[in-house]
Image (cartoon, rainbow, N blue to C red):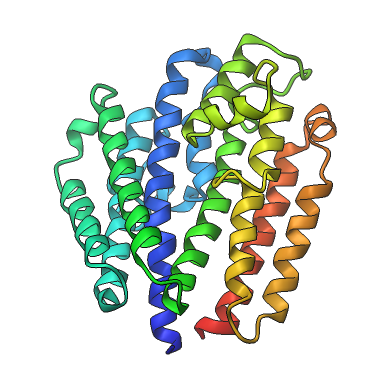
Length: 305
């Protein structure tokens, strides 16, 4: 396969996954703002988590709810609308390699996000809007996984999707340990419970989590589940295992394969209780995100150059 075709498929996978993930992140923030204390909630932390601080500051001076939502819905370089446009463009130039139904779904999502976003800036109707974006994205993923032969094109889409998913799962965990509540002694409070419940629900993980953990929802168990579980599709360890399985199908895979296995070992060895007690979960997530960035760089230099 030509490297430029592989690159388009890889970035199609990343952008279509990023679309769903930004919608999930906005959804969990919108729900959390109703339950958390006003002085413990900061919309600017959402911009920090997504990594778009510089682009946001070029347009807005104040990180209000309205400004952050407007930015993430329609900014020309960072938003839901931008991600769908880029996913559609990469799919358009490679559409003969994927199911027709997948192309139809990306067009459906493009048309849906072409509507005026002003009405979505208020909370009324925002949940339904974001839920629809997530639903179409899931249908698109279903067509790709259920109707596409597992040859090289599928593996490049899969690598993009799972790397993006692993990255955003770590960022959504960050919602619960960065800037929401002032640093304080770690203890189970009603707000801790609400916060971690929101993290689980934003990833459609609550039911699967409850099958594994019978105790009250708490940070240690949620972080353990979402980082280490090898069977839940949005857990970081599962995503990286899927990336590794695709690496195995490609030539010249030694360096990327070693790096993904090193990251998996780092996650497996992590003590979530200790990280939370020492208020270092955020620092650990930063390390994982750095590993993911390096993994992307190795993947790009090996197969996409």
